Length: 118
Image (tube, rainbow, N blue to C red; front, side, top):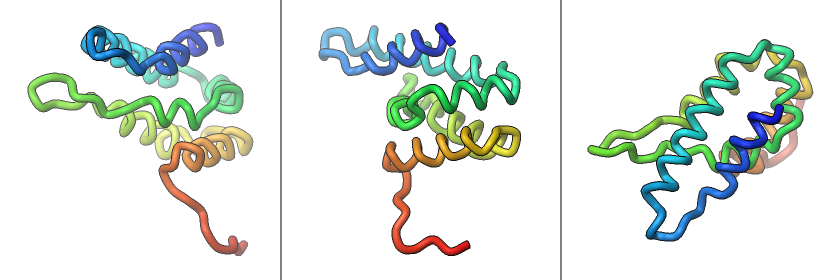
């Protein structure tokens, strides 16, 4: 839990002045890669616990598909969303699924409007 907290702190501090932009960008790319690797190595129960504990909206907002030189991108946001919303969604408990849905709404990825019918 301590590792994920430190990585999330790096993402939170990601806005850097122009002088430090390249250094900061490398730190952010590394933090995003570490978060993705950490999530992939968690058991289903551990992933559910982490997702219900962290601020998923902040995570989804701050992880980005960043330029990685020569016109290539890191695709970290795509990989994170693929992992949380498709690859491992069925393995998580209801509270974790709700936290992911809430986080995506907070991050502004989609808005729910109108009445919901069951």
